[in-house]
Amino acid sequence: MTVSKALRDEPDISSATKHRIRDIAKKTGYVPNNSARGLRTRKTNQFGLIISALSNPMYTRTFMAIEEQAHEMGYEIIVAQTLNNPEREETCIRRLLARQVDGLFIRPVYRADSKVAIYEELRKLQTPTVILGHRALFCNSFPNVETNDMAAAKAITEHLLDLGHRRIACLTGPTFAPWAQERYEGYRRGLTERGIEVDDKLIFHAGATIEEGAKAALEYIQESPDASAMVAATDLVAFGAANTLLEQGVRIPKDLSITGFGNVLSAEYFRVPLTTVRQPKYRRGLAAIDAMQKLLKGESASPKRLPAELSIRKSTAAPSA
Image (cartoon, rainbow, N blue to C red; front, top):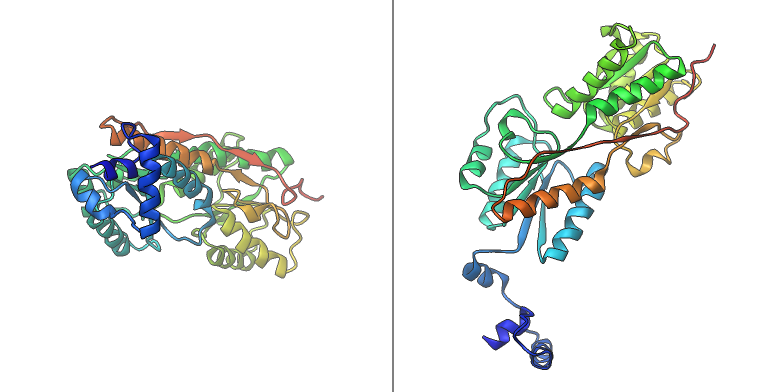
């Protein structure tokens, strides 16, 4: 018992005894068995973090914040990626539940279903779960942390309108993703509140990746809708679109202004530094861990909606005469 308490740094063991026991443990190569400890305490001091892809730069600072705070709490993070595949998402969740993690942070795979079996299971098990991003119908019983995407998309559309643009193309995100719907709605409201009707010929489905942005830009070029500016659903979509446009001889921003959403690290250092929405990625992680701490205490955690700001760079300018 004394050894156990000393290794757990309990206050009722003297510093000298702790030092002597830890020194012996170090010399003998002793490592505590967390699995055995978990069986006794029914706590593993582990969180599961499920995101779409480790390559997505949108999660880096959020993950940093969660890991830093979890470390201070004495928790480890087990990371899994869904690759935006519903079946893989379920497998990831089940594997983490089998590891008996004390809580889950999940960036959902969005779909149109009002109910999803694995989320119903999480709800029945009362597993502490925090949604990273917007809630859909199938996960609306869990607390979440999201950005006010609608207000931010409206603000970036208004930025282009203030510069003098009137025909603004929109590269929309994934159909069933609530964040993409919010960003499109912000774009729509930005136009209509200035008395400009939304032109369906200026709307292009682009998804969320560089490749999808490049494909949407090719469609835009082929259809020649005569826009002077373009808003993209994500920075990655903006990168793909801008690269394609530049390769086709389009001058940014002289011929076409373009904006992104997210402010990933490379946005500032892109070929033409990208005007974008700076999401509070680190604060999103802090808010998520705060919600998790409340759930672990048996308290309720409210949804958190964080404001975002614009980062104006060289990819936007007034339309040329």
